Length: 121
Image (cartoon, rainbow, N blue to C red; front, side, top):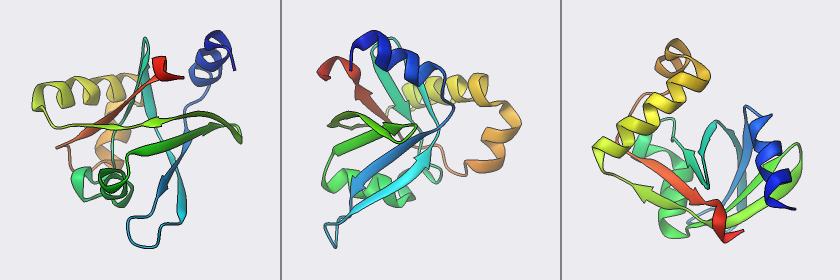
């Protein structure tokens, strides 16, 4: 998929499907997640921060698969971000995209975020 088609697919979506490898069983696990894109970077915010299962799985195996509308469009290594200044910036981007009340409603811990570099695609 071309970069322009990739970005267009992401820009018209509010949710993506994230697939990670389970740290114990080794099977693939998929979950719908919210995201924000800034230029060539896709940011993910785990619902329960570092306690979120998909985040713990990513810590063991950073390979992520991202699908939009049922089509796998991205594979790459997720990078955990724990710098609180950067995490707060990502939280603000989520609030801007999804609304402050929904972010507060669904997200319970804000200690980490994940970035996926789209340039590796």
